[in-house]
Image 1 (tube, rainbow, N blue to C red):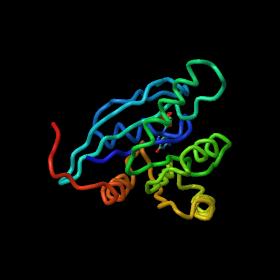
Image 2 (image 1 turned 90 degrees about the vertical axis):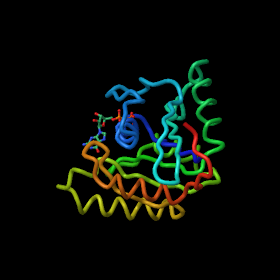
Image 3 (image 1 turned 180 degrees about the vertical axis):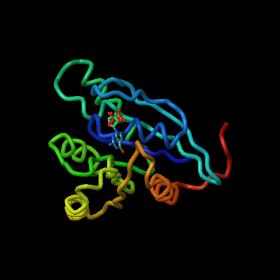
Image 4 (image 1 turned 135 degrees about the vertical axis):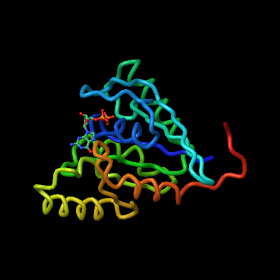
Length: 174
Ligand code: GDP
């Protein structure tokens, strides 16, 4: 069974994405950042591939409070053993928080898929294309997919890319 981590700064749409991919509400979605403090897990079986999805809200916990340190450590521990990392970013902006998340995942030894979310607003399509090119130059090792988690655009492509990078199962777990 394979492990898929979904990482990204707060409010970029991770929970919306995971809820749609898994078809159930596991993660809490909210406009307020850091609503979810624990790593959240969900499972999806498709054909010969079974995937455990991991949401790591503590990855970007900043500051030196005891709670933040704990959240951060448990997020990093969860990331040690994954097969695919899905890094969710915004269609237009790359912020310091994105940079911070990237610093924490860039040395993971697994394929990196960058899901460029909120690609539903097409009025600024040219800017977005430029941004996609910028992302590809910045992250040459990554596979880049524009998606809309909210409107479920291109999620099949994303899931296909994820599936191709997961090990096939000999045994299924209930
Ligand atoms: P998280 O903090 O990364 O888990 O982000 P959430 O999933 O809670 O989403 C944050 C906000 O972005 C919510 O208001 C979502 O409705 C919104 N959102 C998520 N995906 C999309 C999208 O594809 N398009 C648009 N326009 N909004 C989105």
